[in-house]
Image (cartoon, rainbow, N blue to C red):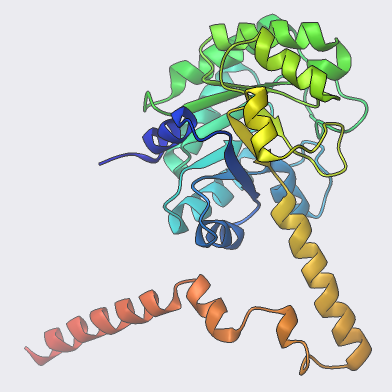
Amino acid sequence: MTTPARRLRALLASPDRPLLLPGVPNALTARVVEEAGFTAAYVTGAGVTNTYLGMPDHGMLSLDELCGHVDAICDVVDIPVVVDADTGFGNAINVQRTVRRLERAGAAGIQLEDQVSPKKCGHFEGKDVVSLGEMVGKVQAAVDARRDDDFVVVARTDARATEGLDAACERAAAYLGAGADVIFVEAPESVEEMRHLTTQVPGLHVANMVEGGRTPLLPRRELGELGFAVALYANATMRGAVVGMREVLAHLSKHGDTREAADLMISWDERQELVRKPEFDQLEERYAATAERRRAR
């Protein structure tokens, strides 16, 4: 049987690049992403923090909270899931526990970053990074901790903002040398910088497409030509959902009911299909029938 991690590796190795990787802050969004035909998903730390805690991406989420979300998400989709584990929830030893817990929860891969803790969104001001040596140790710890050799380790550096582009490239190369499978240099600020990354550091690269962020938003074709293996849209789904909620609420506020708002929502039947209610109905009927047969004996 092909594992989610092995399927993720196959997607990363495909010549059809970059892999489009939408972010999911919860299990329902993951169902929508899979339904839309995407082949992988990304559990966004910022998205989970925003939707679950109602707080900014300032390192507020705990490992237990993240694992609970990952377990729920992986339970309802078949596509491989990459998890944003921020700084790994501690030092290199803590990173090992983080990897093992997320792997048990069903993750196909993990992303670790080199910010100091508590971290911030990569497109915020006021970031700082740990030493190169400390992050190399974390990457090595993550690689050593995985149970499945196909489990993907993504190493992110935020050094572009604090130490410059060349230092970020140096870190990226070091993280790959420590065993990372994919490199993620956060927040390059021009197409020229993006091209510099992929040419100076051979390997699989993530392009983080943040609407309103520091990095240019480029078409998939151009990202592929620049040499990126993954196009990450970490919070596009969440931000789109907020627009939808606001439209429905504006209608309700204006009209006092939702009788004419059907076009702003999915239908009742679509909602039940999305959460697989027919499957649960079949299971209920199956096990109820089994119990009835046992009582009849």
